[in-house]
Length: 296
Ligand SMILES: [Fe+2]
Ligand SMILES: [Fe+2]
Image (cartoon, rainbow, N blue to C red; front, side):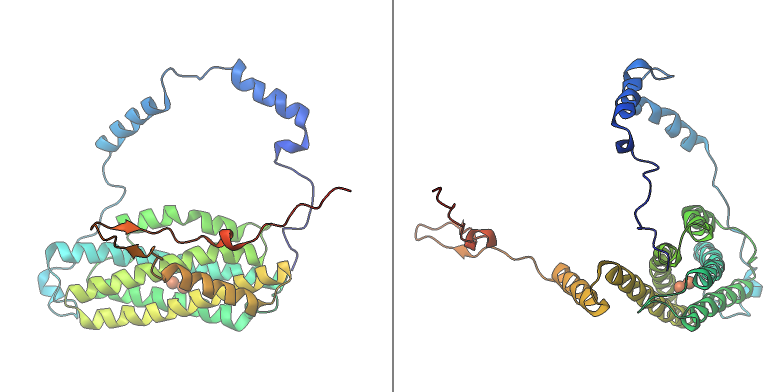
């Protein structure tokens, strides 16, 4: 794979021309802002716009109660149905984009190939099929609700805007497979989080069958994230010349270290009562300093 970290010309940093960099910084003293006021003042119009603005999108009304009663979603009533319809719309939009993202990733695989410990075509195709399967399942669920699967709900609108950068990275012809997978890692993290919340929402609404469908999707997403993390770890490991297993070991240690309870200093109880915290010797204190060499 052609690595983007190969040394090349400095095309963006000021260090390429210290003389011109100094001149460029002088401009900040020569020019004045186009408007009076401070950065804090610029917040005022934003607040005003936000107060006046309506919603970016709305949720289509769910089916009539008569229609709902015929479906697996009969437990839904009123506001609950609207909240669920909004989140279902968000997931549907994200899964559809997810399938498109993996089509872009497959194209990058064809151009750049993979690396030791990297993705295989079969794995990428399996994830692509999963994303498509999730999309179709959501499409069916929304239809069962009597809602419109093609409608952009408020949460779908926000998610599409927030994840627009991922598509930009993957469709950029200059990015390689590893860089594209960095973008996919963000999508998979969001996927995992959102499916978990959606399943919890369905369960809290008493819809066990729907929650089970979402749990199935979450299991797929967990597998996707595990693979993407491994591929990225292997890519970085090979770039710096360590084995993927060594990198994995370090990552596991870091993960378990962050979960461990913070170390606390032992507490000494003096006779007179009260509590005195004893400082634990720091690791650096154990290191003996080398004596400076005598001059001859
Ligand atoms: Fe997904
Ligand atoms: Fe996924």
